[in-house]
Image (cartoon, rainbow, N blue to C red):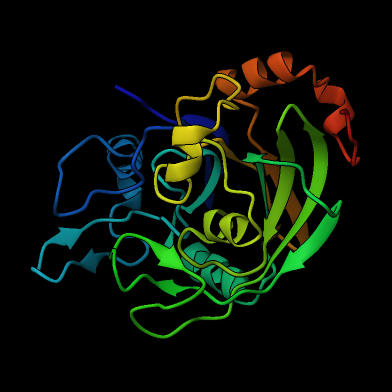
Length: 254
């Protein structure tokens, strides 16, 4: 059974390191152990905190203290609220862009620019309900903005830092595809790449990691980091990347 690791905890916050493969909360299609299951077992006082949801078929989905989500295959840091007042505050900070989220990812190809901003709007695909797109959506396209900076390039891939300024579903993955550099092993947005490109650096899952999150808290800012998982460290070794050189810098290594 896959379980998260506790990064930080106090009377208001629970910060978790979610491993790849763990679903944040259940859905009506499958019943598996989730991050929400872990929270309900360990922190019973968090049951009822936040906003539960109902599916179209009326199935109740419990989301104890969950303010934001990570996809199943995405690893990294998540901040949860332990009480309703903290939940309301965090939700407001997310909606007003006062929360800084930083994702690290290996993508296909060599980026032309060391840094940039992607402002392509995102909507649900008309052809596939679980896929999002920047064009020809089923419904309305919604504003989305992601900043990025290059940390390393070589061997047919790049290692990139992404800062999503909005919180659309699959935003980093969709925007990476929009600029022509899909995330390695992305089963939804890089199917053709996965079939034809040998550059994988040993990844068997989406090569996306929620590395850092900074939130306003107790009249100051608090930053929480998630250490790189084993598969990222293995990729660094294969690529010849020294991890300490990735902190606070932009580098290229061809």
